[in-house]
Length: 236
Image (tube, rainbow, N blue to C red):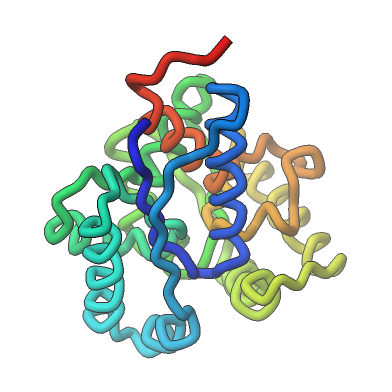
């Protein structure tokens, strides 16, 4: 079994889901008392969120590269960045850390492509929805057509993520708004929706969504389990 390196804390709410999902995935595959081999660095999100808000991405990059380097030097065989938004800085991390980087957009794109769907809606922070780093990867590598909500809806989705979900707060009015926005994406032709923030499924689960919902946290974890166990035989 390979050792998975996690760079988390952005927010710790979703990073805790990664830890659970990775261990559940390994246990399901290998049985018995097996669990995932994990090395994790979990950062303090408050100063990073301020740097994001201020647009100081170079400073964000320095912090994440430093943390990722610690994970690699501790013996991890591959790195997971446990957040969608900070994949904006994936090129800087990949250029510095000499272990495989398991991309969350690739895990998501592969799963959507396997279903045969082509037109997807994307929810996430304003950075994930509005900038090209995430949408462009899905479009160019997987041939997907990606639709995002209108400006007012993007602001609402982003606000709920940072002021509620990252604090572990789940509120019914926010869920209703998210469901309304997903329905509007369906009206725009989306065949499915990507929960492109690792906290979103705290608020909306696939059974509630008016469109098929792709949980990026779950898909990233499954992708990593496949990598970790590529040479491991199931236990009978």
